[in-house]
Length: 138
Length: 138
DNA sequence: CTTATAAATAGAAATGATTTCTATTTATAA
DNA sequence: TTATAAATAGAAATCATTTCTATTTATAAG
Image (tube, rainbow over all chains, first blue to last red; front, side, top):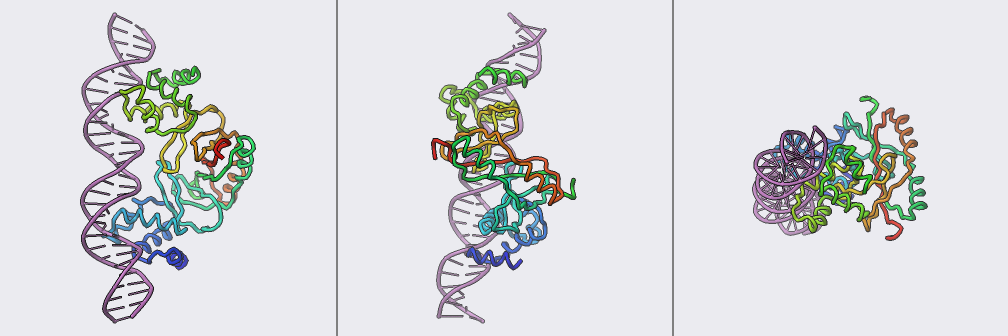
């Protein structure tokens, strides 16, 4: 918990009960959740809570490097705790339980070389979504 | 044009003026476009045209393998003509002119091996978005 | 410990993409 | 030519997300 609170401070974000509750939720549920999931789970403990607040907090925590975003199949954003905030990496999402695991491996150089040579283009960014079944669900 | 009309027939889709117009648009504009772009461009020639029709046609043409989908930064779907309907491949999108180019290269095996070994998971699908500047825009 | 201030929040309302629904029209196969 | 299922328009509904405004709160300075 402490490193996350430190991250809040580093990003000039006040430590509020709502933000702490959101972080706690992700620490406890190590899966990806969308704004409405978070809202639903927190509403029990914090009856006075607005959905726009959840949207905003998820966005702020992402900018602070505490959460990462991933696109779900319905094109809505889901969030999960990021434990590798600094290194370039990808994420594996379990299609059954929604668990997110970090993948510290990227062999994107080959594709980049191919594109820059064959298409004579400049590659600026890439985003990889990997899905499947985690060790428990398969 | 003929191969696309054949693809319509193969998918039991009637050859209608609207569908032909959408295909024609993508043949002429070799860039990615969203439903509203398509609607705007076609509305000039076909004043009687509904936006839901455009949404539906784009979806049908995608299922028929005539178009491919790509997610734009705002998480909305964009479409482009697919000239490699059968082979697994990825797409490069120019950030400036929206042109889509097909990338006949995929070195996903390395990542898959890494994940299946390290996480003991089963990889079922991957989706790669590559962006940058095309040869003309860079 | 107060207090001042900017930041954070609730709740209502607006926005905007996408889908649904129903009546009408149309492509096409017989 | 005609019957039929498929396609379409246009209005309306849906639903995620954002904006707005008044109120509350974290926190830094005294």
